Image (cartoon, rainbow, N blue to C red; front, top):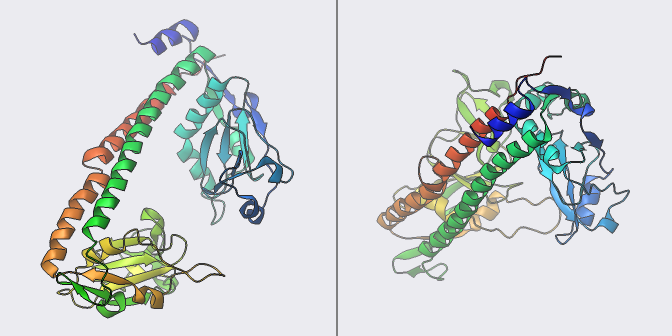
Length: 386
């Protein structure tokens, strides 16, 4: 019998009480602060962390925060708008007053609440899905949410177990981050052929993207022929700027691009490059580069050349990468057989860093699923009958 089983048998053999969060935890209020003010006071050395909507987080000095309402105890922050999620935080912090947080006198109980809420995050996201284009939950949704309230000894043991899972995943993620930095260094070394611009070095010619690619900017989304969900008719992905699934805007019935291509974010995540070897429909904030002659440049090689590239953008206004600027970018173009060999090497290295079926990514994925399974099991209690 595990320690947790023994504690449950001794302390709550007949089940545990379930209560609304508002009856167990103290609700904390945030600070009235605008996005503009946050930009003004942001300071990487700041002693106070400020959470805003979505995933916006900054640090600032306490004295620079107007009407600051600082939380100095462990608390669970409810991210109630945009990205619906929960954050456990122990250091001094505050948050935009459209959100709220919960705390109590025992740190273990605060962490226990965090794990309960994370275990039910999909419930809260569904509760927000019907509240307009920007997901948002009301205060009542969390205040009235009923949670199990086992004895503190049981809460403490559950937190210890789940913290161990979290720590192991964090260690694996840190190792993967180091591996990715190693990959980026290796990629850059392989793609360094010399500094002869407009000339050649060992059969490597430097060419502008405008010379070797057709560059185009995405237009408006086809609103009369699209669906937010994939259907039999609408199966062609509509792609905007963003990373991974965040770039998917919806689906349409006819592609604009059918050849292998590289897309480059023009706004937001400026410069983020992605290789696409499937039909798609690019829209605003996205540039597309398609090789004019596939015997001159391999689209996947082009992708590796542009991956992680930094761009010099005009000062003032909203930062944006334009098609004319992208056309000026020069890349080394070795013979096609060299490009193909480099692609094979970099594909293999990239897979080790990102493929969920092999290496560290696979182990992290497995650990995460294991953690979620045990979290659900550990937080499932029989309700005590009154």
